[in-house]
Length: 119
Image (cartoon, rainbow, N blue to C red):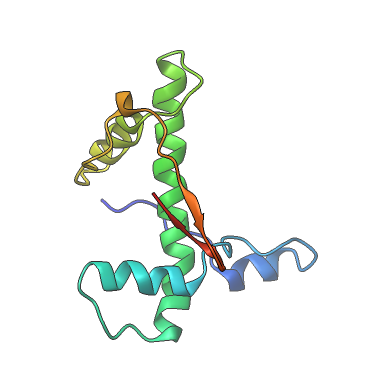
């Protein structure tokens, strides 16, 4: 049993040409970086752009479920346990290295590179 497929850019644009495109916030470059992190070195730009809406859709599903766990626990702050519970619900391996009691992680901008941050 597979979850429903995300709406495609073509189907969304046909339904309402005046509406903003759906699921186009995740850049293909981000998908390529993620692919490289898991050992896929030669992911083409076209494939990365084609995968981006599906990756964004799945990420939204995980976050929406995590928010449900947070609200069910009557909290206003999303925790790593909420995200891990959402992942577990989808039979996906949990995240490691970010306990909820560790407090916020401080990031600082890299001088001369406003798009880069360090811990």
